[in-house]
Image (cartoon, rainbow, N blue to C red):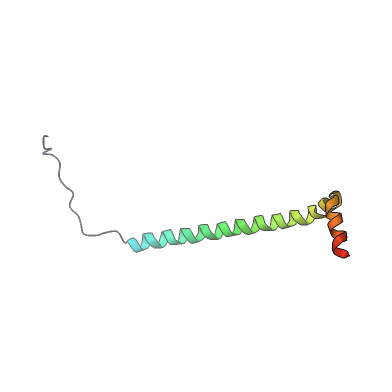
Amino acid sequence: MKANAGFDLKKVDGAAPDNSIVLNNVKQQNEKFNKDKMDAYMALSKANQNEYKTLSPKIKASNPEAAKLKRKLKV
């Protein structure tokens, strides 16, 4: 192999980047992502509850087995 005479190593200026700033940034983004994920989960849960409430009477009315079970519970 031939050595490249024009290649010079870069000198380190001694100023290393502050990793705590980068780490803090990552933590903040992670917390924001988790909060957004929880908000989406809660919105979906609320939508599912609302859908169940609106469809529940229709399902019970069209399902004869549900009516039989309801009568058995009353007795």
